[in-house]
Length: 263
Image (cartoon, rainbow, N blue to C red; front, side):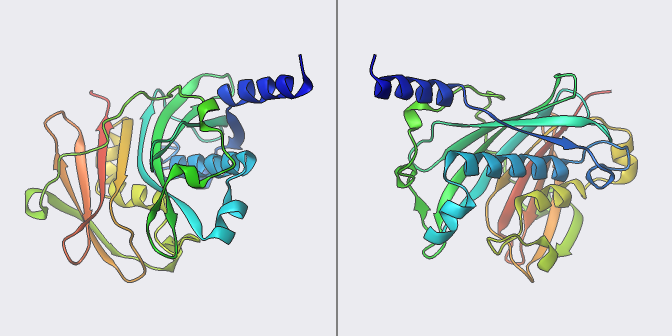
């Protein structure tokens, strides 16, 4: 067996089984009034481990920034098997799945210190040319062998669209104006912030009586400083809550589906 053939085999096996893991201690600032990890903090952990994985695989921020490329989250769905409590030492695991023409998939799991799965999540991303605003094809990343990516799914769900509704069909529950603290280095509202906006459509009294089963977000339009946003809530036929955020032009900027356990 040649040395080159051996190392190609090791590389392919590594990529087939590839997963990236970071550990965190759930801190006071990451939990809600029930001392459970709040959805925006979930997204922050997932974003952190995704960026770290991309760095490891060679297409992280240091690769993207000089080329004026950026990855933007378009959809994410998270399902809880159990709440993540304050003080828990967690492991957050991620791996990319083989991309399509312009859609990049990434899977996640959050595990307890005992190794129990607390959350499964699946997401879709796009890569954008920040100069032109155009979507970039997956082949632009010329240092990746997508055929060796792990296709397994943490959450095998491909339902990304939510039933749309007009503002008058829902109930206005929250409004705000975007300010600088919402921004990330892509000069728009960071994806994690939208989880707070959507969950602000529930009162403390409502959430006190509910146990979160899962949530999904669809990012439709970028929001920037000065944008006035209004968030409407509606009950869906399947028992879930739908939330839509509208800008001043009545354009949908974000959609959410939020599910709670019965009883």
